[in-house]
Length: 154
Image (cartoon, rainbow, N blue to C red; front, top):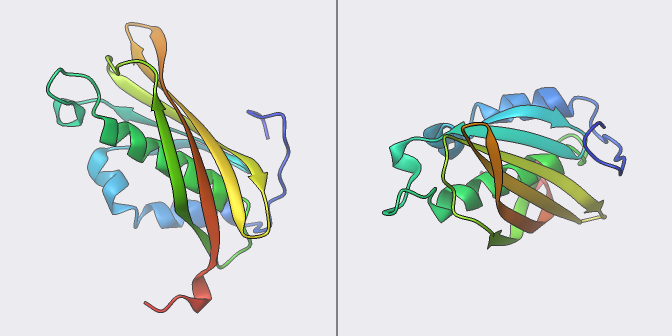
């Protein structure tokens, strides 16, 4: 893993292709225009070209957009450390807003902090890029719950 000090084991050797397949059904992420740029064990980085539809009334990036981007990168980082046929759901999400989002690109980095038996603890940092400058807008934390997808009734 290149972006973190901690090393996590991939319990699913196909985690990257499984995540890429799941992205085809990540409908809200597609609606936003968010995409994943890096997928590693315990780390995911994504980006979003900001448009008017992502802004609130003062032309700052809407808090819901930032919370969603945080949830996406932390969720897929957590997904990268669970066994095949398992998934994760968010049980807790905390987003701290540090600076207004003013720029043209949103970048979100999510990482696993601790992977336990059922719970996976994650962090995310969000940044907005404008004219070559990078400003941190958010720090988020989440707890993800590991679920057996074979046991879920659809």
